Length: 442
Image (tube, rainbow, N blue to C red; front, side):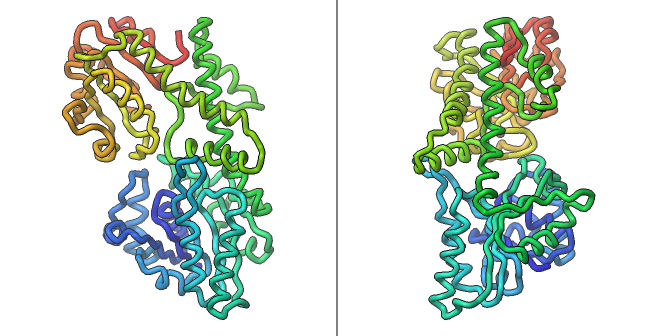
């Protein structure tokens, strides 16, 4: 099948590469000339395990193409995926400017029947507006009777595991009102669910709501555990043990029940805010989600208080080793990363930072001060040199079992460890002479 993907961010590029991997002819379109030039050479600007190899392989085999010319990609394609960004506006609502611009351009260029598939995360009612815009453009061109449909198929890709999630999804949701569209989309995505039928067809508003509801629920679980972690510390409980006790209940499950520094990234923060604002515009107060958002903000303050409680509010002359900068492991995404708010708080109190992340260093350089207060180090042991404290921010696997003798010898006397992801053994760390602080642990 022939597919046009508009937008080469995480969603568009992963979707396009995985569709090509399954034998389809895919054109990926973007307005960023430099990005497209890089992709034509097999250079992927985002870090996602397995993605660059897949892009290079399908490029060399001729199934994957990159272009800035939408008409070139649109002409042969039956399926047209809209996968452009929907960043938050200042008021928290999703900015749909790029989505509507794409709809207008598609309506102004298409000459044959198409199935347009919205893949971007969009509020309820947006797919209908895409349909209206395309229909209006076709009417202006005298093509009012040209057949087309607009469906919504939300993505459920976890950064750091996006390729695997795309190739072997938990479910594929198809929001459409037409049986022929449903049939064709099932045929397109069939290779991804060969072992089990995981298709769920529903109304377009239900599909649009499902995407937001899923992310909001996951964010709620995280914030719930983070709030619980604060109570655990007060009463002498261990949030890790509580997680096991809860998670083994089949009604609850163990996913997204880890306490830490709070959620970040490109999805949860903006989608929770967008759902709150969308509901408010319709007279519905999502009080639970407002609390989720506030709990997430509070968790960063709670963790900072552990540091200032140990060293005092004035951190002048103190040096902190920061392990991990990206919002989660296995990605270089720094969008709303907890490390940024923590770094700002430490620097504002006079601290110096020595930072290391396996893949996010370059993106972090553009976001952190370039005034000598932050030193970017070649490895995580170098970051410890002369540090008063180690702050583990992102749970990269290589941080779990460091050489503690080497850690201690690099740091100043009476070192402290602030474990923002509960990755380390409190007993072992304290036995080696460190002051240890976790999240919701004894």
